[in-house]
Amino acid sequence: MIIGNGMLIFVRIRKARRVRGMKEEIGREFQDTLGQIRSFPSSDLIIRELWIYSRYGIWRFFRVEDTGIVEICQDGTTQKNSFVEVIRTQRAVRKKKMGSALVMVK
Image (cartoon, rainbow, N blue to C red; front, side):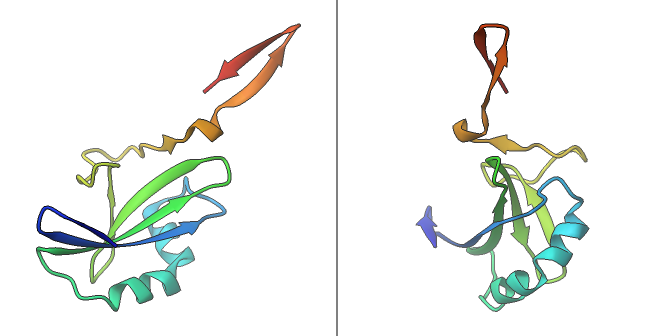
């Protein structure tokens, strides 16, 4: 639970096999989890969210509505375009060997 600014946010964090799929695929994969999240009340001051991540450190965030899910940005605002913005953690940055030097690849 996140409490602040007069709001209460219920968040469920889950590891996903695939985070780059369409939100419909995410909805099917996490159908049980979404049902559990929907059991919490919702209002203008109570928000329900699902945060998913991959083993590579990629994160996606969704607001859970009664009829579906809406992809949101890291700051909680609704995605403005149809392109998926993925958030990578520092752990997701790989080291790639090129010749005798190590180069950081994002």
